[in-house]
Length: 467
Image (tube, rainbow, N blue to C red; front, top):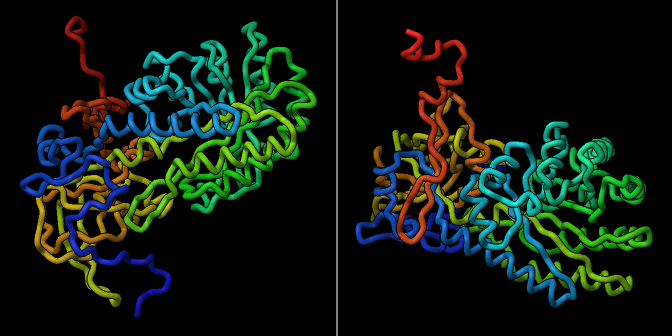
């Protein structure tokens, strides 16, 4: 009898070499030898050149998705009588190259720490095209954001209101701000991701917005742009966004009685497919639904449609990314529920923490060859000293998988590198971007020497002149 508490096991595919559309990069395929190709380059060639584990991004698809979501939302809100601006949510994955790609495709960039801010500035970003949010910005981070002229700081609490106002006063500038509110609309996602719950660390209750906006308007050093709300992550339809917009616009309309409110930020959280079972609504449908809801609510209240801001991250960079691993051991395990083959790879929770954090599902395929062997139920696990070190909980690989094969995991462009750690003193993998059939490193991988360099118990190398 199957364990009712066990996660559902996906049905065995007819072909264990198949690459499900929507899960794998749009340009992924298999070459004449059966190897998976990303951006036209075979996985074995990438592994031989750069090593494994290895994050791989199809740059052309990342750019295409950034351009697509921007134009889709611009067009949808133009029909609704307004306009839209798109911020790339840097927390999904950030590097100087990513920032440059986003800016080149007409997006702005959202950061949430001083480190992310400095990456964006190092990439040459105009600070005025950056947004800065977060629930506990340090005084140093606030001072720096004001100093460089960040386009918008999102206020997350009454304390931050005072801190940003005082920093702007000291700098002699007027700082544009948004106020993050909690709409009470709960996205149907993992509990830790549903960030519109009342009992959570982000934002202030929507009912407090009028009082706090009045305080913002009383500070000459602050310029109130509008409300900001984020209802969660991995959202597959527009229903939650529409209901959140309805609640926000009700307050937005009331705020107009006290002054201008040019913007409304509806956040991000648009879902992607991690497995063939996932069926996210097309982004065109979501944009049209959101625009219609905003337009209807504004029309009913006789107010103009504000400039709408959104903050996608995962939707842009997730699907174009994969991770390559080398298989180390293969171990069939017989349980009361059947046989599952444990496939151990040379990475794990240090390069993909999402399965451990959120029980996230992923898809895996052999990357170096095709196979006629029957599909076998596998669990892809890492090398770390944790039983929860799982990369792919349940999928199927050909039954003849052996040590030395390449395992390729799909849809890892978002949050995997961002959440990566050095657990068990394992270096974080390199990130390689592919464009027009050419591969290059955009984030270097860490070596043991890099890790040892941080250990203060190791004497620094003696300089020749000190000998």
